[in-house]
Length: 292
Image 1: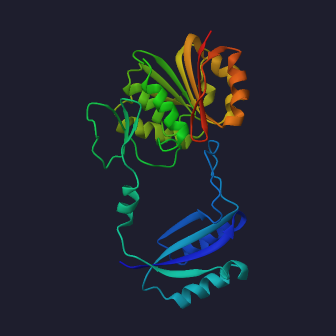
Image 2: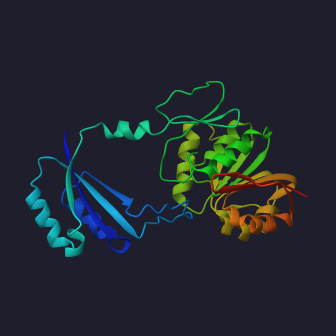
Image 3: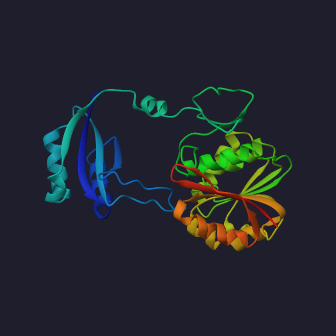
């Protein structure tokens, strides 16, 4: 079926109103993209940030009455927003197939692979994590997650008690389970992340090893390993609490840190741990260490 794409420019304040108007007018799909090419990196859990200036696109069936559509939107939206409107035909494609083709199995270290559900594992005997792009952060495509997976691939996790703080999609918890960890506590403040972790753990057949919790459930001590892929600010603020959860000799890996934030985070953890040299991928830093 051919389609028509109706695009409007707006800002964060009016984004909901524009989206609602397009939906009421019969849009089959609505997409919000950045109008100024300003990237947003990992948001805080529970946040859904938007760019200041947006392009909002509604996808309509090609036989829609475009004059009536224009009139309906004109009655609901300001003249300024409507002056930016653009209506254009869209090539008929299997858009779900196009979206899926953007994602392929990815390797981290020697043995860990992230494999979308519609792909065959390139190495069936490797540590294959079945994971599709979704709402919760952490599908291996971002350097902060990649850095953690590469680190995990080089560790001995057999029989370990692991804490994944800020679990997102559960990708690190699942990797730990498949690498031999005995028990993983996955913690996040966002219920959506906990649900995503549970669903992904079930898909990967590791639900017996992973439990999901809110931060209030964090015990005082006893973990052999801490995984925390969040943001530099919370990492520094939570250093005392997270280090307390580690047993002496326990390992930690921290990610979500920009180069200019490295010293501050490392200083917070060096009060409790012997820290290794930072590792960098793109614009992001990974820190690791061992509790004294």
